[in-house]
Length: 450
Image (tube, rainbow, N blue to C red):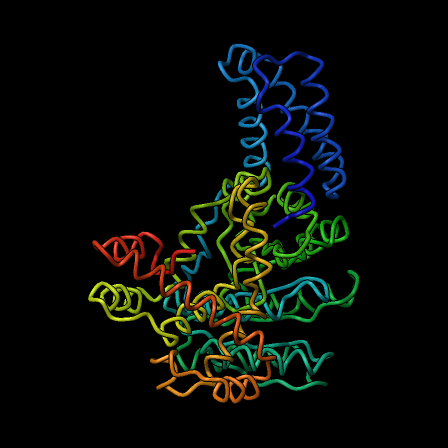
């Protein structure tokens, strides 16, 4: 998340961490580096000036000079100012209104509105237990309508049909009627975008808002878009009086300027952040955690929550009991573990939540256990018979050739997987003695030890 900003800003503040004494000169130098990091991240100039002035004022005051650990106190100040800059933690959408509650998504083309609509629908269904109807008024891009229909099916939401060439307002009215008649809790509207803000687009979203009387008007912004996105946010807020912001594509090499600017420019809270391509990659905005990640401190709380929500605890308990009773860890068990790691996006998807000093050590593992590699390993095991998975010792050369051909991988890759499995099996046997494995797997949230 915000890789470029994290790299530069964490270097600037880390240089201060070990200092036992701070002077006006080294504080000024650190503040200058912070200023350059924010400008490089495309944070709006007025916001950079206000931010660095606030940091400097606090740093040269009694707060740091009287501190036992001045360097750490300086980092704490930068962290607190980042949190203040980004606003308060999100508690989700306010849906206290007569149903169907209308949630409108607006923004520029390419910001990720349609993908965000699918993620938000899943979040509302799973977290808020709402019955959701989705509709697209992007009649200029029929593919966007088809994409939204596919996403609705995937996440278990209803879909109100629309077609290219129809009047967007007519589509919206029809969808609202359908949502009312079929007792939907939420009508989720995906509007059309443009490459740039223009009068026609603004008139259209204003008309849709007037017809639907949207309860939530969310601006979807690409975190990599920089100042263009901030200017668009200002224009949409003037047209719609936004109620909140959704920040997308934060899993890429985002500069982060939009995240740090849009809250100050619009005065509207950031409610959600999109952290990946999958439909469950949507998180409530937590500025304190994001500030920690930007400064290279990691976000272990989010990591733990992700593991707890995505690991099958029942399967983990059964596996621990099985091995504790002396039964062998087999390839079917390995497939379950690989599948759970794949669903979490591989090791690399978890890395940015670790502190910076741990990320460097874990990066090699991330490259070896990326989603693509995991999928190939799962494919190898799927090419085996159930009996072969239970008894790996029966895999002779002819069986290996058949499995390699069936999974489309070279024979050495199959042998590497079996070698890794053999090592894991021996490790599990050692830990199983004395009940150590059961306790360890519970502590790891059901995942295998590395």
